[in-house]
Image 1 (cartoon, helix red, strand yellow):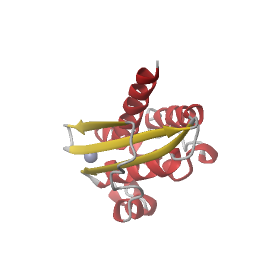
Image 2: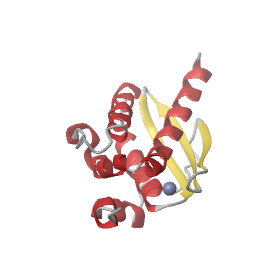
Image 3: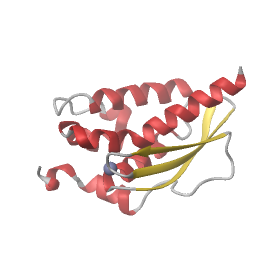
Image 4: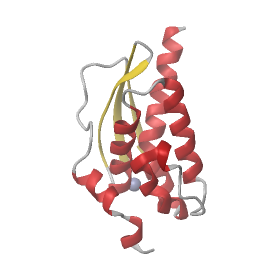
Length: 147
Ligand code: ZN
C-alpha cells in the first residue's frame, strides 16, 4: 500500500486542521460511533433549524482517514438541506464502494473526492465512512423525534 497516494495532501490538511472538531452545545441529538477494526471513535452533535442542517460538530480520536473524513463531512453538510445532505452522503458511499474505479463527483463531494483512493483498501473504508455514518444515524434520530 502506497501511503503517499493514500494520504493525500488534502486528507493530511483536514487531519491537522479539522473543521468543526469541537462539540457544539447547540444540538438536537448526539451520537457516538466506533470503528473497532481500527479503533476510531467519534461523537457527533447535530442540529437542524428551519429545514437546514444548522450545526454538525464532532470530536473524536482515530486514524488520519477517519478524522479527516469527519472534518470534510462536517464542512460539506453544514448549511445544506437534509435532501442535499442525503445526496452527498449517497454519492460518498458510492465512491467508497467503487474499489478505486471512481474519481467521485467533485461538484457534489468537493474535498471528499480526496478519499477516492481509500476505496481500494477495504480495511480503511470503515475509517472513511465513520463520520458519515454518525451523521446518518443522528439525522435518522432527529427525523424519528419529529414524528
Ligand atoms: Zn481508522
